[in-house]
Image: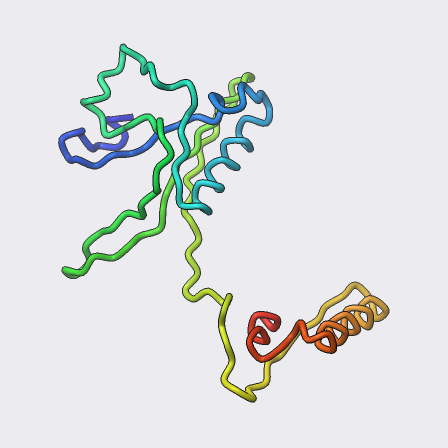
Length: 169
């Protein structure tokens, strides 16, 4: 791993590593999806969760000579920052996921967090600005039912100027 990353420990850069197996055991055929779920939840919440039962590290690995650290405590997962044209630019979080099957199959994924350009939640249209609410359904009967649900929500006051942009989105 150290050769593959090409980063000696002296750079000061650190890469947290962990395992879901210490949390849930050997999940056999579900190990890959369990690892992916753990990774996506960490990205969603911006936290690195500990690998349980990892206090005693492998004595055959000189961890001080690697950029890797076994994640043993709950921590904020900072986004990396790189300098572009003299300005610091926050980058999306990246993670690698490896899964090795008992039958000899191996898979490795590189996952990058999605960061929307602008989040629609909490957006507000200018006073009196119309919004297009698109409805879709399998057939005409279901479309009428969906339109009625929307109308009922408006009549109850669930849809108003403050959330119209979110409903339309």
